[in-house]
Length: 162
Image (cartoon, rainbow, N blue to C red; front, side, top):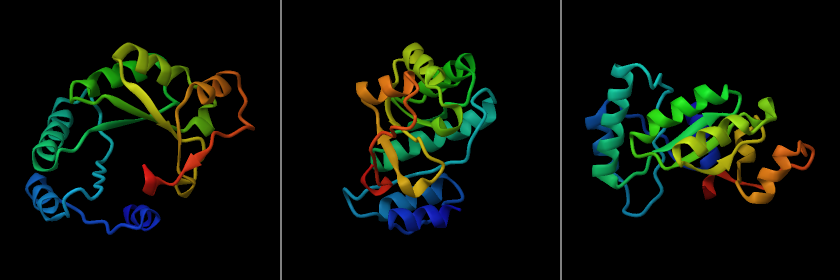
């Protein structure tokens, strides 16, 4: 699946089995070139999983100045989404990408998470098809989603431009 995503972004996917391998890959990249580090989903309330992710985030920051961004499903309970976002904010996350708006058709849980934590809701996914990209969040997009104007999809852009 990761290779398929890489093809959509027109990039070569290079796996890193551990933090040392990730550091080597980050050192090898061309200065200023985009870099996406995709980790597996974790349970932010599991201290071992969270500590492992924290080491990856800190290693990426040191090696390449990476920025962690939370990708959060809108099909989540508002209280749970807020608690999850709060945990991830402890990693220095400041931006939030909302997914599964095509399934949930509601924005409340991610708005609650952003409000509670101060995370900026910057992108959203309104389609199950990765190749169709993400939509930029704006007041107009937010209003349309809140009012249920799902037939008017926000303009999306290619993931390669994100």
